[in-house]
Amino acid sequence: MNARILLSFLTAWLTFAVPSLSQAQVIVDAALDSADILIGEQATLTVKVCADKGQRVVFPEYSEEQPLQTGIEVVRTNKPDTTWLNEGRRMEVSVRYLITSFDSTLYSLHPYVMVDNDTMWSRDVVGLRVNTVEVDTVHIDQFNGPNGPVDDPFTFEWRYWLVAFLLFPLLALFVLCLRRLKNRKPEVRRVVVMPPEPAHRKALAVLEQVNTANLREAYETISDCIRGYLHERFGVLTYERVTDEILAAMHDRLTPQQNRLLTDVLTTSDLVKFAKYQSNHAELEQVLEGAKELVRLTLDHEAENRQPKVTYVKVGEIELARKRRRWEVLTWLLGALCFGWLAYLCYEIYYIFF
Image (cartoon, rainbow, N blue to C red; front, side, top):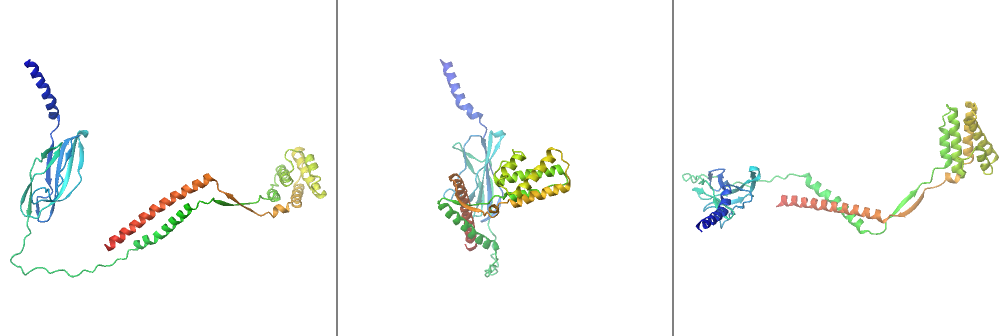
């Protein structure tokens, strides 16, 4: 029975004591950047805490009601700075206090922190000596008088004027974008339809570029050009027909002179291409001029004088929605830019006059 009670007691003691023993020691250090100051001067008190990861470290907040120590005032408390140690198992947290004093004496500072709701004092007590300012009590009539008025020189800053003038075009663009977004009327686009190039112009341009150095190639170019011209000018199928079929189809559409020119051009070209007819440059020049003359005699005067047509087309809903989204993005960007520009201008004005 006694053995069982002893075993239970040991188990309970190990349960509550061992975890606390396994935790590493909490270390609190304090240091001053200057141990000797004059009345009203400031010094920095650094408090460092080294604890395990997961432990809750709370630094005290000092004020006039709760000073660091009687006679010591805390001017500013910086934010805690954490450094991880031992591969993240330990942490070092430090806080800097900017302190001052207006009483000349020797202070012994012993700061503390709260770790897991326990008060942990620093290992060392740091000393701060505050010295008074020496006053000449012998020559009391020798003192410097007040300074005279100081002229504040005026310096022209061109950037203020630049910022102010650039704000107006930005605001104008912003207002223009807003008005464009408010306009929900269907958008109509003006489209100018240019007339097609007349067939005789294209044919004459090709005939002017004929290479007369190669006879066979020149005749092939002339024949193909005239066939394409007849198809585009009169709507006759010429590429899939032989010469006799083309002449028969064009007989009633052309004058006798034009029929003779067409017969001479197509027949001579076929003889050179298929019958191996030996032509010469003089005959080639004659056929080429006949082709040009045929084109000039059969040109379409109405096609020559056609004017561009202007039509108005409604913009589709999808394209209109895309354009509207682009305008919305542009409006937001200009609005943000104007707001930032105006805020900067107000800041500069406040900085100058206040």
